[in-house]
Length: 255
Image 1 (cartoon, rainbow, N blue to C red):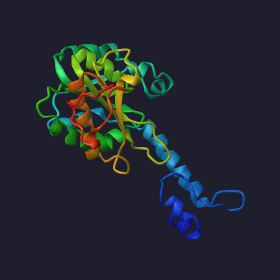
Image 2 (image 1 turned 30 degrees about the vertical axis):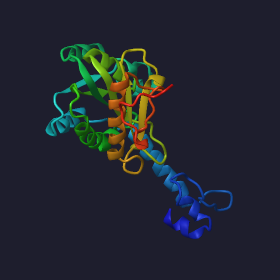
Image 3 (image 1 turned 90 degrees about the horizontal axis):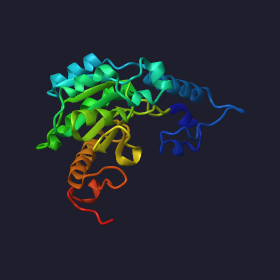
């Protein structure tokens, strides 16, 4: 877009946002450069949705940096096409995954689940960086095995957390790609995870990527939310992120 920015006097608008503004025009059409840039962004978004995550390799990477044991499970979606067409199946575990989790059931403060979601690229690029920054901030908590979930939606973490006996379930997964962010990672925290939880019962930290919310800052927010959720016994609309206001996680809010 550098050539366009030099040619059009309103280019300052484009320097303030990654959104497609102040693109200029040629007759009744957009400049060729802008059209081609749009086509590239669309292709990157489609690739993010359809590129599979190499779970075996990712499990090896996790184990190599001390995140063990690592359990691998899958949702009821047989493939990517089913995943995209049947969101409900991505929210429940396949039958052969249940015994894997039951074998490791205990009483944990936190279980971390990593799912491919709608952008395996986001998981590949940012999930391990986020975890490496987050876990040292949770010293003293009982943390269960890391779970890798294939073809998983957000709510899949509820069933996983319940089977493992976790007080909190934290699921990291790739968010729906946009035309400016094909690699955005989302983190969803749920207290007392169980099948049937709704989004109002979760806290979300989204757009985790170097060009959005830096993984280190996301880790700081998540650590605060995790400690506050354990102290107050809830997540969701009753728990606001006050990490940047100087509040301690154990502060009791007046409602």
